[in-house]
Amino acid sequence: MDNKVLRKLFLGFIQIHVLHHAKEEAIYGAWMLEELHEHGYDISAGTLYPILHNMEKDELLEKEDVKVGGKIRKYYRITSKGDAVLQEARAKAYELFKEIK
Image (spheres, rainbow, N blue to C red):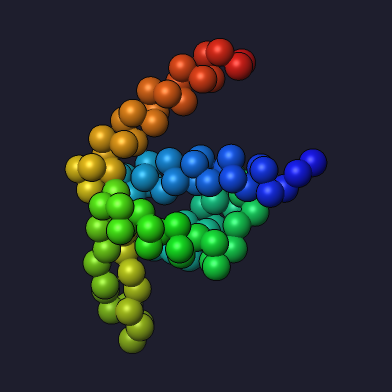
């Protein structure tokens, strides 16, 4: 199996997953890593954090720095643009699921 190809394919799934959870509540990187691992994604912090930063740069997420236990934790929430992208991704994913099930 070509892990490089799967990794590229799963990147989109990971981003949808991030948007979904950032809509429900503010998320932070370490929590998101655990969540993704629970769903079988083999992803490292070195991969996730650039994804979060790029999603923020693309205005899909907004970041808030919060002091937690003497350290700054970056919390991410979905933006209105991110929500629109999530809704479109859900519709496309549903159509795909109906076709490939």
